[in-house]
Amino acid sequence: VEINCQIQTVQLFFKKAEGGVVVKAGLIGLPNSGVTTIFSLFCKRHYQDLAVSVKNEVVFGNITVPDTRVDKLSELTDTEKSVYATIDFADIPMQVEKAVIAPTTINLMRKMDAIVLIVRSFKNPSVPHINETVDPVRDLEFFIQEALLSDLIQVENKLERIEKEGRIKSREGQMFLEIKTQLDNSVPVRDMQLTANVKKETSGFSFLSQKPWLVIVNCDPGDDVPESLHQSLKKYRLASVALPGLFELELEELPESERLEFLQDSGLDKSSRERFINLVYTDFDLISFLTFGKDECRAWSLKRGSTAIEAAGKIHSDLARGFIRAEVITFDDFVNFKGSIPALRKVGKLRVEGKNYIVQDGDLLTVLFNI
Ligand SMILES: Nc1nc2c(ncn2[C@@H]2O[C@H](COP(=O)(O)OP(=O)(O)OP(=O)(O)O)[C@@H](O)[C@H]2O)c(=O)[nH]1
Ligand SMILES: [Mg+2]
Image 1: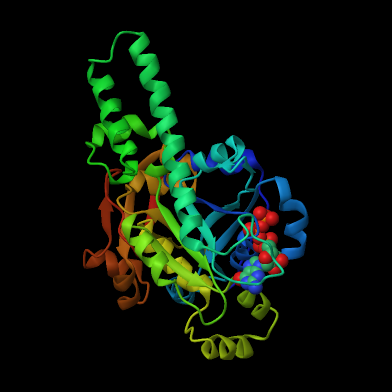
Image 2 (image 1 turned 30 degrees about the vertical axis):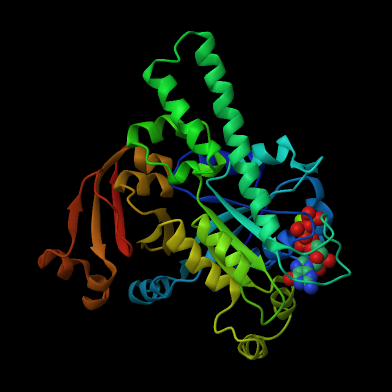
């Protein structure tokens, strides 16, 4: 599978993120925890090129999601080009000032749809740790507490304004007081029992603790998530994956067969990239829908529960703007009928759906539109 990666401009990256259906994940971690190593591993970029440029700027890339369904589609429709779904990533430069995360870093994290936190458990004494010792539990706690604190400050500022306006007894005032109480008790916003309406109201704040977080434990080959870290992750209900970042980056230099052998020797059946993609899909609740045509067959990642019009907008904003209806075929039906549209239509396996149809994993979508 081809991994392609391109540097996009900051503006484009964030503009696309506003659609809400495209996931932009920010990779973050303490200095020297291997963020850029893992970014270059996932996005197939040269570490050396990045290590120079990344120091103080965000670098964007994407990870290609392997999907055999796309190959099958191309085969059935005699299409030359297969395009795989991608997930966009940013390597966020980490700035720590007086043992707190600098506001510039916090603001970049806020712009992301999801956070992928990298904590270091690899030893390598020649790579210094800003806190001198390797302690993944301490580092995880640091990020969690910093996220909660930055959300708390936002809520307190909001409450202050509400109080000044004499509206603390209002529904809004009470809502933010409740959120503050829970943040004080270290409850992330995402775990609070909030009504859908309140969630909508709070989404404008881009609370860090409201975003989905995933943890990558950057370990030495053969190591797993340490038991103590396991406990902390459980406490915060965070999913994690352990992977030896540098080791796997070095394996990338080898031919495929040798690489697999090395992986198996260190007890891994799949590459870290694949294991990570699986985790992202389940934890961020993503699905893939498919499109087919003369030029290309393609998979697109989408937030589960998205509608046909949102899926259309992911392909192109014009498709959402002029949306008329979508024709939907399940992947299995398409394969069973060898891609024959007339045959599928005849037996009612080609459904016509409106803009509010909830797109399912593996749906083949044809959007009819008019602008
Ligand atoms: N042994 C070992 N060394 C690693 C691993 N990951 C990264 N390193 C080394 O740690 C150093 C820093 O790695 P980076 O990936 O640049 O770390 P970073 O988190 O991006 O650091 P900053 O961008 O400086 O904040 C490099 O010398 C890497 O080779 C790992 O899994 N094992
Ligand atoms: Mg870096």
